[in-house]
Image (tube, rainbow, N blue to C red; front, side, top):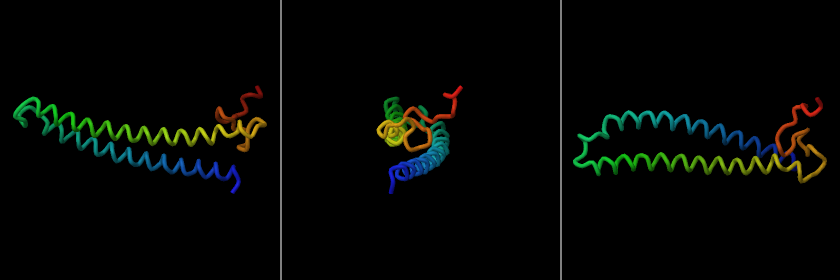
Length: 115
């Protein structure tokens, strides 16, 4: 398999992963709405003996949300590294645009340089 085909396969895989992430985020948004509704109805002062217990419950809910966001951030940073490796590859081969028809390490060439 040529280097160009390998890079194109990496890009296709990355696009598929991004689509799956979008589906995950959509499902998480629906879940977050349900959690919000539940929280508004159950996490109030009358449901707990002390304010400390209410605070602990609220913090545990926020902890889960922060962990999810951190996980998605790590995943996106990994995808960014892969894309950076693919898009930055033109500089290694020399000769300007690399093997991607005018695409350089800074992005795509849309023909604006000619003007």
